[in-house]
Amino acid sequence: MPDRGDSPPLHIHHDEDEIFHVLEGEVRYRVGDQERRARVGETLLTPKGIPHTYRVETAEARMLTITRGEFENFIRAFGRPAERHGLPDPSGPPTPEQAKALARTCRQFGIELIGPPLS
Image 1 (cartoon, rainbow, N blue to C red):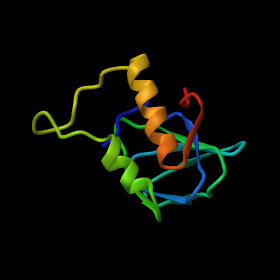
Image 2 (image 1 turned 180 degrees about the vertical axis):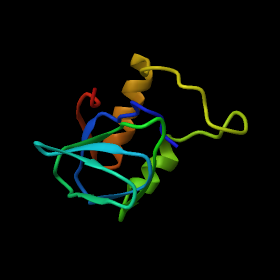
Image 3 (image 1 turned 120 degrees about the horizontal axis):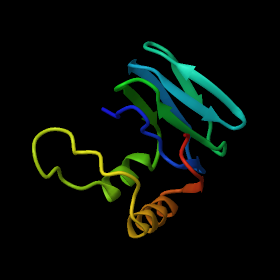
Image 4 (image 1 turned 90 degrees about the horizontal axis):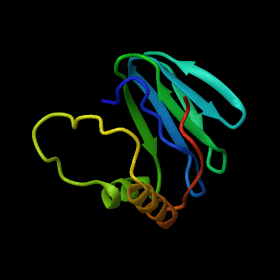
């Protein structure tokens, strides 16, 4: 469950659309040049080839993310087993090494990082 301020880098999926359905909280999305806030029960499509990102605007949010393609394999490739039960402690921005590893794995699965997270 992402916390307030959670925001991935602005990115493009070259091979698949991505659908977000908000289950809890409020999330601000940037898709192309437009921004939109989505609340519980709202769904948003981010078409392939269009830059997008999001930012959690409430203390926590839960989203269902639906894709059809390589995104699940990207998550499996970049993920790591939990070190303990529960959510990890926030660790701040990634180190330069972590950022390079993320960009490398993204490229492998048709995702291009093109800008910073939403602030």
